[in-house]
Length: 171
Image 1 (spheres, one colour):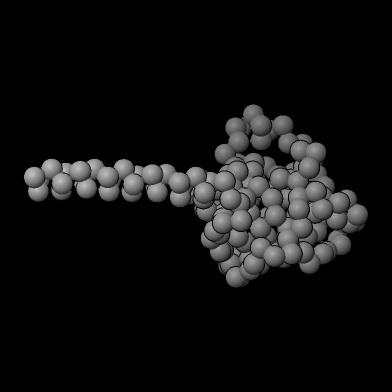
Image 2 (tube, helix red, strand yellow; image 1 turned 180 degrees about the vertical axis):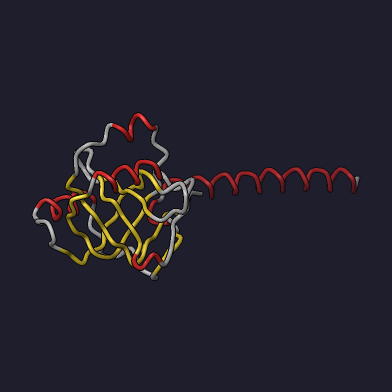
């Protein structure tokens, strides 16, 4: 009789425990307010961050050599595959912000950060990038030699020097 009661209690406990775990995982997946972040560089917060659309509008109003102290949130498109010494964040209209890290003092993950949400704080600016630098960045990003050879003109780019970065942890 004791064995039967123990067996029934064990089964009920397992069923309840499994259901609770399933419900908790669902809550984490559906609530963006519960996102946790990993900090790189200076400790920053997510409060007050502009959206990618608001940041794009700021960039559009800037001229070469203008700088703007700002914080914004976006998705990571790519990171440096060699060191994690840069990343690109999506803006709008297929535009990106190229992000480096102040004083080369910290790096982000080389793999697995793409499509994660990020918040960066630092200086936004417009820069004309030379053909040599564009080819260097393409090589670091793992582009093919054919893609690298197609780079023949300098580009005006949206740049960002981050002193702190938050990258959302995926549960």
